Length: 269
Image 1: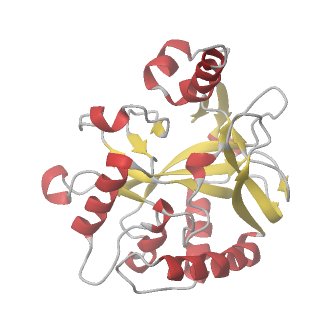
Image 2: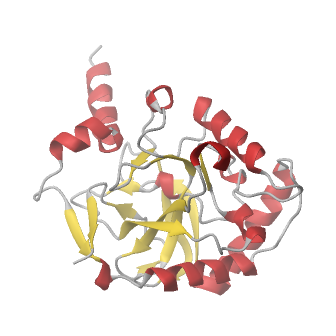
């Protein structure tokens, strides 16, 4: 019992930053960070850079999950990432005691303003059901307009993502990445859900940026995008896909862990 209470307290301190009701009650001018959009790389340039990187990745046509294939593509695309964006990233033990795993720059350096990860998961509009999926789920990301992204890779969240991926598949073409549900995503950027919250010792070096993937984004590259809408076009109408990019607030070099602020607010002015 003596060890149970500290464990609960420690678990809550990690989880609370993903618990939407707690965030709503605690976010204020003192706890939030405001970053002006004009301090970041323009969104059109970020999307262009992302598209260019994905075009450089080793392509594949398999529709079924293949762990051997994913392992091979993960290793090869890490090298492409290093050549294309100047860095590679990896999941590893966090520098924060008790925080489990985090995301570190493995080689090279991520330049200020560049995309360093993507936050994967099913995208829910504010009016869509997510109660059951939210139970004991610390991987729910809430956007400024109430859109939610469920980045959990287990349980019902995992099943829903796979179901949506199969539903929206166009012939023999994948429209999203399912490999992020495994330890070896074919797009190594798809690990944003494992970025830990900042601490006094480790201040935030990345910020969340909400982007809408335009309908003109190449279909053949969507298999590297780790997001999909919860409802089909027939039920919810045609809409741009929301993606969450984590952008570097400063240059981040090899060996550094990525830390975010779950209270980051990006303002237009």
